[in-house]
Amino acid sequence: MCLAAPAKVISISGNEAIVDYNGVRTTTRLDTLTEPLAPGDYVLIHTGFAIRRLSAEDGEETLKLFDELSESLRDSEDSSDTSQATTGQGL
Amino acid sequence: MSRPFHLSDPVRARQMADAMAILAPPTPIKIVHVCGTHEMAITQHGLRRFLPEKVEILEGPGCPVCVTPTADIDAAVQIAETGAILCTFGDMTRVPGTRLTLEQARSNGCDIRVVLSAAEAANIAKGTDREVVFFAVGFETTTPMTAAVLLDDAPTNFSALVSHKKIPEAMAVLLNLPGTNIHGYLAPGHVSTILGLAPYARQLETFKVPIVVGGFEPLDILYAITLILRQIRDGKGFVENGFPRGVANEGNIAAQILIETVFESTEVQWRGIGAIPESGYRLRDEFAQFDARLRFNIEGETGDEHIPGCRCADVLTARATPADCPLFGERCTPLSPVGPCMVGTEGACSIWFRYGGREIP
Image 1 (cartoon, each protein chain N blue to C red):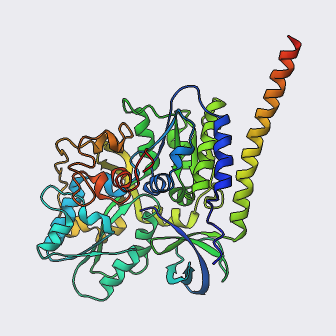
Image 2: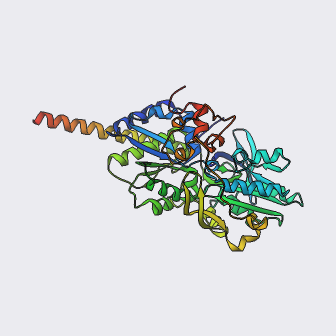
Image 3: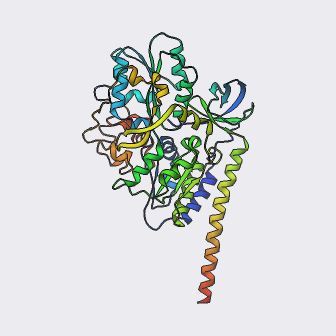
């Protein structure tokens, strides 16, 4: 029920926009959006209403977050391995 | 076609699984999510196999169709039987009421229509003189749309049977139920797009469990679970935004204002849980003319929810998996569902039946 999908804004007319979702064009209401919108932006659409503006770069930004987390966890493990090894030597 | 938000590459998923392995807990951990869309993504993509051995993730009361109490279905049937056009989302038509499902009411001649949006229901009302009622179910994601339609010059023959619910309140109650044993919450991304982070903090701050908002792409979910495991390892329990492209920390203010303008909080019944104070919405007095319960004189009913043998109540409170139910896949299947978790396409039982649950088919 809480499904929402990103779609690309094609044109805007008052309270409504025409959007393209993977080739399917449909109309969405904009009552539930505060951000200013322009053709080419992406929006998250839930039951016929846009609930969040997205930009194409957001996907890339998200991947960066994923990579940072994996790297920081790997690094923390590496450093704890090293510190254990060092302690081991000390003993 | 470019799909900039399609985040499912297997190499990154493997990296995330390796990261999670670093955080593998020594004792069993139960993470609960409260969103059918999460369960769908987790099960469909086989994400459970990426989790460390002692980590389990289950769906709680995350399917609005499943938690809608029988009394509300009965009210909808009663309204449809007066000859009004009753509009609702598809899954609602198959949920058992005390006497009938809406689907059965339709085969008895009632005019029941499936819509994809509250706006569609209002448009049906604009094209007819008959009474049109929107059976408004769903969590905070769906509530602002009902509000927007009522504020947008709704026709006088239009009304709403409101059954909207608030998810953070249910998450808090679940932690206090005996036997739920929840170590962390994967909070629902799109509900959070509307709410932001504050309502979780308000409801759940006394509990000190990690609450991480997650998106719905496979990598979004693995990322959010990794953040939960990191909080658990570090002995933390706070609200964290694991879906910043979809969720601003303050939420969607326009949508929040729509909800506030039209609705006020009230105690409502949750199937499987019971009554929870302030966990649902009713129309404010200024909008009473759109209240279908008043217009059709529906008394507060108590529908019969007991289904012999069915463990939906335990599945909805994350105390059992669908596979723990003796009816699952035997007497209860998507074609002939016994309990509501098999009815809703976002119910845990329906999803596990179709995609294999914990086992990889």
